[in-house]
Amino acid sequence: MTRPTQTRCWVLSHKPTTNGDKTTFTQTTMDIPSKLTSNEILVKTLFLSNDPSQQIWIAANGPPREQGMRPVEIYDVMISRGIGEVIESGSDAYQKGEHVVGPCGWSEYAVLPVRSIVNLFRSPVMGLSKTHYLGGLGLPAITAYIGLTDTASAKKGERVVVSGAAGAIGSMAVQIAKHIVRASHIIGIAGSEENCRWVEKLGADICLSSKSSSFALDLKEATKDGVDVYFENAGEEILDNMLGVISDEGRITVCGCLRGYNGEDPPPLRNWHNVISREILIKGLVLDHYIESFPKEIRHFYQAIADGKIRLEESETIIEGQFEDIPKIWLKVFQEEHRGNLVTSLQ
Image (tube, rainbow, N blue to C red; front, side, top):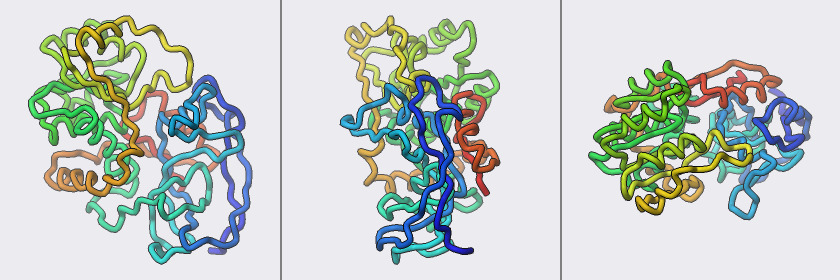
């Protein structure tokens, strides 16, 4: 193919106060540098991962730059992890035609620094699609593993609760708690009864629908024997309920807060006093702090998959789309209808 000189891309046109929609982004065209440095490659974007946390980077009341998180500014290309095919390489480490995982963004073509690329395809897991490297063999899996084993120090025989259990990270956390940590009891929390049944197939002893009118009572009953570790992906009311049932000296890993990514004022946490009275440890998880350990951590999943302990065959939802559909498909991540990692295919 002829080397492209321009690329279509979606840029942020204004910072929303509610979940981003198509009016939040504008499609435009940008020039591609005519020459790459020795530390750059040019890729064509094939797949994009859709993550709730992307809302943090564009929210009007999102985190400031000085907190170590890089927000998307007005007219910036929207950030996203993706899989791209190398069109041209300025580096000896990558060759034309290779597929790589990197920060492709919402761009038809992207120039990526070599340091930002995670090329796991050179040690593939047989029988699995490339898109699993955006989910169960990628950052969601590593996030779940580190959040449980390092941040929360989950141990064999402990009781674990995972919210957002049908999502990309939560579905991996359930399986890791079951088969790697070897927790004694695992409770999942998901957004529908159908997804709850799927989470139970992954290894949860029970999964509760957060949409049920009896959720608070169901959670109290399910946790009557105690909770040692809570893997937090939900926020707001679910977090408040968990603060009411977690055991003394329980540990909470705060990985995400799906219901609070827009920067609005959250409802009050009525059970916050338990953090003091029960000596609860709450710790946030910033994955960038663990980037050097990624290659080591991912080996756990290669072995667990080989042993049949971790299931990836149903752990992603792929939606075929055109470039124009990218923002619309991303919005589906907030609808809690998909399972596992939500991926946009642009092939």
